[in-house]
Image 1 (cartoon, rainbow, N blue to C red):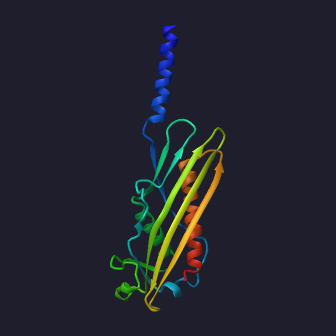
Image 2 (tube, rainbow, N blue to C red):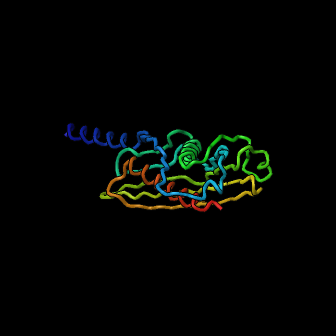
Length: 204
């Protein structure tokens, strides 16, 4: 009888520590690689664009998501590199370079029309991150993953003396047999591709 009680106690402690242990954290990489062509992109942006530091305006900045399984350890997600604004800025800058636009860092532009006259490039761009979160919940046979991305894009075009603002808000919910970091990363990259493909096709 004592052995049975002891075994049940050990089992209870194992379940307790599994449920309340610290969640594992995975770093997700952003890769925006469009297969589309944007023939009017240089005409809109000019030959050079200044990328001002992106701004993360979310309340919770430590992570970009979480997955809660039916049982066991939860999983947190963070961007690679950190912080999130740096990861987004790098992937967008790399994409613009591949599309033939020269990208330079422009820490002087504050995203307003007033300071646009002070930039040395043809245009300037910055992004305010309003929401960026992916949340997965596991059940017995499947997992539900809901991802929300809300961005406010500021584009200043010096030759026109105008500031163009675009707010994008995407919510994607999918059900999969099993949630993995690779699958979550692919969902986020698909959303980013949809957002920036649409934006580059018609920035203003």
